[in-house]
Image 1: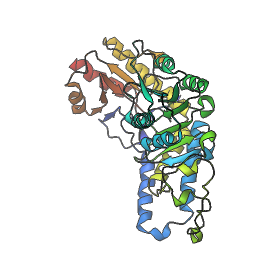
Image 2: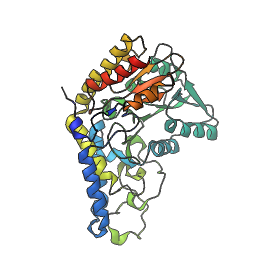
Image 3: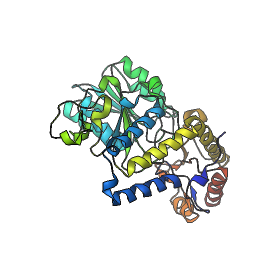
Image 4: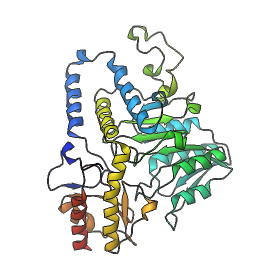
Length: 377
């Protein structure tokens, strides 16, 4: 069993950070890597042409390992909205078809579909909150023969309720629909395999559970979609880009695989090494091990909440890393400030206190949280 890894982070004593779903901290090692990268930019003559390609190649390799993909299936993107824009640009939708999303889904995986539906006289079907908490069954019921796209996550970002994306993929394929996933709230701490799910596109930001930098992420593009149109027409995504002496010999052909979808300046000499360091740590610790450890913490949260008469999702209907403590009628207004006064950091999302521990937390952090809740409620 994995143990608490707080020593890897610069989290002061007295601070209880239970908010990885908002933003994950860098490790001390990743921060050192970032400082070295900044120092290198002081002397740009030290940046070799090979750095333009070796840095992203490392990110492709590590991110592919995390999801059972090939490095050639991966692209580097600055954000989830960028990745979903690529998916929207390359997924045909006809008049009268529909696009299925969840109620209160994170906007980056909603706005592109609203626009795409408007442009094609299609419909966005928003699946309402299921009374029994079973998002999977509710989404599956909404998918029909007119569905062109299913846009989802594998956990609702507000409270961690689980969505079975394997089942979604199976149902989407059965009606000829594309599956587009935003896994920003789970990848790296919940096991995921493209071989099991077979999404058309999967996109993730690195700054939460992947413990990476902001404005840097990656996406998976299924082989069947790798001939699509990119958002940008960048020089570095073209074949032969490694030869800087011939860049003005303009090439029509792109690099192989998903590389045509890379953002411009994908070689980001500061963010890329930080992201690679963070991905390496998570892979070294093991996603399965991280998930098992975090399950012990969210189970403890669930038990403590129920003991106070508060509501949480059933254990089999939530992911291991993220849990919502639900309040009928909304979270009391004074709770957030009371917690912050004790340097306990969580998020208020809708009618829930969203608690999202990571590998730097332990059960003592959970006890601190509930000591305040017991006092304030």
